[in-house]
Amino acid sequence: MHFEGIVAIQAPREKVWNFLTNPDFVSQCAPGIKSVDVIIPDKKFRAVAAVGFGSISTTFDNEIEFVELIDLEFAKVKVHGKAPGSAVDALGEMKLSDGEDGATNLTWSAEITIVGTIASLASRMLGGVTNKLTGIFFSCVKKKIEE
Image (cartoon, rainbow, N blue to C red; front, top):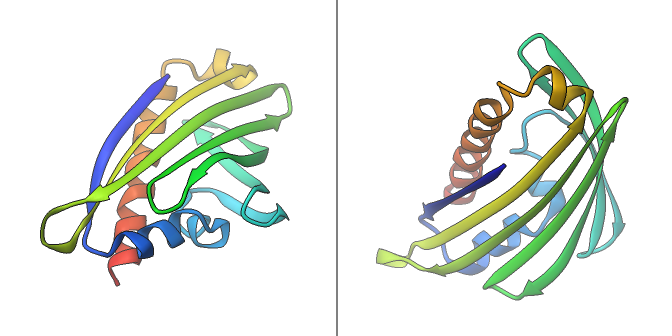
């Protein structure tokens, strides 16, 4: 599944960058996050997240790694998560650029693959649920950075 979008955030690029590259800050907005542990500072961390697809829910143990960082401009992150009988792999990118009136434009994209029990039982709901969770996440990010 492919997802992408653009979010205008009324804040300097440095503030947006510092929020989005800090797992403790990002986890405040990621729906279902139960815990976050830094494995290698500024590089790799682990997050446990509960995800529900209708009446089906599970907990994923995710390993997240920044695979490319260009300070204040670009980040690429790789995610591999495991749950009983299921797995998720994702590759996400974010690009920051100057917007109007001091805003920062966040252009993002994600390629997500879910396999196993969750994929087979909830396949019709995956896209809709993922879109909803993405909307909640970016709305929260925007609000927290603009505070």
